[in-house]
Picture 1 (cartoon, rainbow, N blue to C red):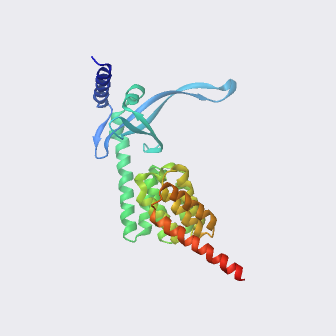
Picture 2: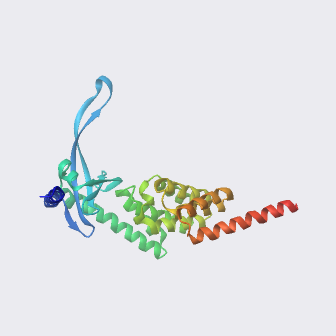
Length: 278
């Protein structure tokens, strides 16, 4: 028998075995397959001669991304998934982690529902012009998960839209410290927040917002375009031109960037002409 066929069958068998074992871990919900799992680790407490080792159990939330992988996230003290996301395979889940089905049903699932409910209520209040109620609901979500990106976006937008710039700046600082704020799943909120920063003439925050997003994702030409706009609004024309050049290198057909580049070129030529006349 052909070795390629044998290897293919082995892979298929391993995949079927992993999926069968995954039923011990995961439950099907409206978010797809998800579970809570744990891992025993030995940690060192103290230093030098007083150092000692202790066994510790760490708890995680996992959600299926595709057929072969899951997104793994630590659970915080309130049993909410929080912090950086790591991608693992089904094989890693089964080999390295223990299932904690009861924890998912009794603690993690209900906490996640509470967070989602609070954020949804906050969104409704914000849309209906009730900023104080909106802020209260977003803060309810943040009590359970202080790094919840959806709640931070909602709270920040509430403060921006209802003229509380100092509070908006505090949320802004917390948000840009998180890598997840520029994730594609939050694209609509990300764009809306950037627009509000510009509307409120928060030029420095707008520049830092897009610069930080570029640190996380360097392949999105729209981030460079928006950073160019922020530079231009702050009077940094040469920096704006540089960002537009990068944007157009990545996507030469970016219509808005082409128009903006022509405008800046025309503006520069006009200013040089006026300068010579003076």
